[in-house]
Image (tube, rainbow, N blue to C red; front, side, top):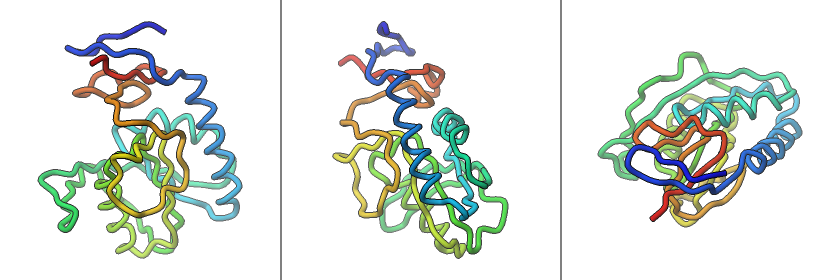
Amino acid sequence: MNNIKVLDKEFTPYISQVVIESAISRIASQINRDLQDKNPLFLVMLNGAFMFAAELLKNINIDCETSFVKYSTYNGTQSTCEAKELIGLNSSLKDRNIVIIEDIIDSGFTMSCLMQKLQSMGVASIKIATMLYKPDAFKFDYKIDYIGMNIGNEFIVGYGLDYNEHGRNYPSIYKVVE
């Protein structure tokens, strides 16, 4: 893999498509085992998780449903949890087993807001599947059930992750060249 340029920044190869696909296969196997006979509803966090979700769901072989949500935190603090719901939940979630699919969890703030909303709607359970997790940036204590891989605090693009809405289309993940 060669370096790429996205807008005004150069990025170098970081995680190959082969490594990503292996992590997704592992997560799918865990979900298939853990949620057999639970008919989970997968909530895909847009925009970033679309590529991860598409590949993950192709490997899910249990009964399930899929929906999409889009949240943006803005001027929010941990205590007020102000999150702007851009695309919302359009069906009753009471007593449903939810799996939130996210591309990356760093501070964990937006996920915390979504979890609070889901809990207030009376869901039976919430599990989180993320392709990437930044443990050094994480500020909460909720459990992340399925993690593709831990990474440092690198700024990355590709495989759904963007830099100012650009660079999502790459099949591998690249980190910024400092």
